[in-house]
Picture 1: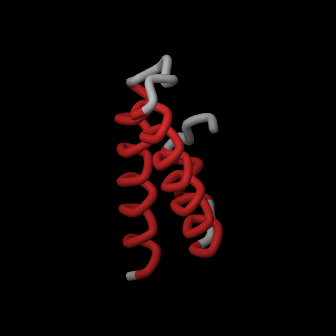
Picture 2 (picture 1 turned 90 degrees about the horizontal axis):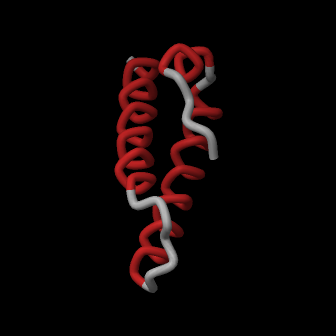
Length: 65
């Protein structure tokens, strides 16, 4: 999945943000699995995905206030 800019995240609704968080968590699980069996070529994707999840959760918290 391509990374999303913060300005793009802020344009999404709460429901869309929830879906994005779930999709990124699923992607992170798959990346971790690939890493554990030695098939992951781009190890930096794990860190990028975790960072993107944190950004999405931050924007989601801002919207819920």
